[in-house]
Image (cartoon, rainbow, N blue to C red; front, side, top):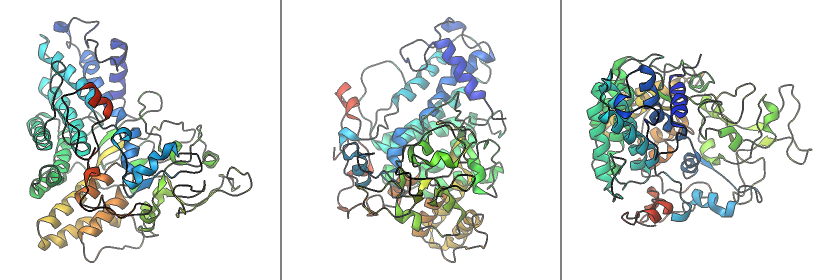
Length: 496
């Protein structure tokens, strides 16, 4: 049965607070502040909203991040999905500050800051207070990592009161995330069980540190490959995780038993919804007929053709896409909107500005739930053990060419489970490693991050023109103009 600690805590919190999104309310509105936190239920209700912020991790902006990479795109299909050309401009990296994804995560930060303030001011003795503090600060560091990666120069705010903040430098934000994670990791739980499932543990903090250091050269100009590898080794040597023999075990409806997922968001169609609706977004209007689901779909995002073609045809991960003729479970054809032509997903898209309704491979990575609704019940993994192994391989390769055999062994370990007839790499290069990360983490939110680290985000791909190598302003998104309008102390990123 799916573990519901986090969902229960969030629901209890919302009941007590009337509305989880009203950040100007006191968190202790029904209980005096200096008496709050005396019971397990009160503590759970207190920290629940902090974990509740994770529901918004996979959101509309997450989609926009994906379609700025070489992985996915949203072609216009006549007037469908044209939207003034905004999705086409995301694909070609021609967006403006007025139509940018909103990676400003200060609502999430403010929620954590309020809870920390309450803990600072309660007179109640709280059991495991150090661990609770560590979880909250690690969650805040995670949201700062998201802003560090996507925007860069954001304010560091550790209180929910005070003057309108000014920007900190990207290096300062990096240092803050690093110092918070180093300070909190020692107090986090080392357990991996249903009591810690979906919660921040030491292994989550170590995974985030490994990811932070892996990208340190992008964020600060100074690489930290050895530090990244050290934290990969900490996770590996814990013995807590291993590769699932079938990669798709990680994406089942009931994937809470995965031995590979290090940190997952427990999405729930009734109680913990985000914007995790990939099939409604991507599938053709008629696709629901092929599955016993209770939602219509919008025929939007599809895979970039060249990305799909880069897969070996016998790589199991290629099943992350729907390709080819579509039929009902009984073998009857599913039709396009003309009611005559069988729906047949092609890999190729002839004209991304006016694509046919059947063009483009569609997302199919997560198990489809019988009777499933718009919001999925599959948990979404932020960190998987395969990422730890591939990060270590990258660190090894970047540190020294002499490490190539060890790096190759790790990549082939991840790659090996996906082929009936093994196809190991005989020689590993950084370009092959980047491709392997693409195969492994389709639509898991890391492709843009990877392309930037490999300095490929400005490259050309299907329907994306040759770039100006001197212009890399799209490597960062702008601060949203709605935020700039409210705070005159902020300075916009270059190029916007």
